[in-house]
Amino acid sequence: MGALPRVGEPVRWLASRARPRRPMGSSSAAAGGGRRDPGENPKVGRLRELFTGDAADGWEKSWEFGVTPWDLGKPTPVIEHLVRSGTLPKGRALVPGCGMGYDVVTLASPERFVVGLDISDMAVKKAKQWSSSLPNADYFTFLVEDFFKWIPSEQFDLIFDYTFFCALDPSLRVAWAETVNQLLKPDGELLTLIYLISDQEGGPPYNNTIADYQKVLEPLGFRAVVMEDNELAIKPRKVHVVFSLSHGLTKVSHAYCLSSYSISVILCNYGHMLNLPYHLHRF
Image (cartoon, rainbow, N blue to C red):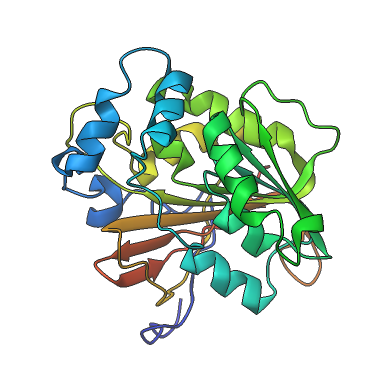
């Protein structure tokens, strides 16, 4: 492989059946997730008390009673950075579990129409209330819908999942991956920022590690080949992961194009973020 890269330089791993590859959950932090039980937070404990029956009812009550410990009260820093960098796909974007919709508004522009989806009527009302008079209001909308049942008129170029995966009961994870795959255009991209946790009881949020993503994505043909560093961080959270997936025709070398997926992982630990982009190819 040649000389080892300096700190901060990209590290590229090419997948090969003849050479063992590093599994997505192989690092100690990634494989184990965070070792803190979010339930120790009184607000998270209160949130879990609201989930005694139907999940949709639990989310509605959380917004009704103002029990929203996941809400940063502002756009996700990673999204702000990516919007400024101009690296995100244009066209149509979807944010499931959008809550107050800060990221929906941040993503929206004349080049990108964004749909914010939430199962809570109260959340959508709050999102519309604060955002309706913004200068870019023509470029986003908020809908009360069930992510797993909703059928849009068009597919999306970009889907942003921020802690949506870990908020779902683990029994829904396969359906999550399948639904994302159905909603994305053939050349679309999924960007998901997750909160890694483990060794806790119940949820939401539920235990989740990079291996849990691997479990539902690999049956769809994902294989990791690239990792690189990134210094962005989100201080209010202990550990996060960002996955960026794209599928369609991607140039793998100067001569070849393959039907492929790509995945980026950003792992933040107490203000330090390790970015591990995995470019995944479906053969």
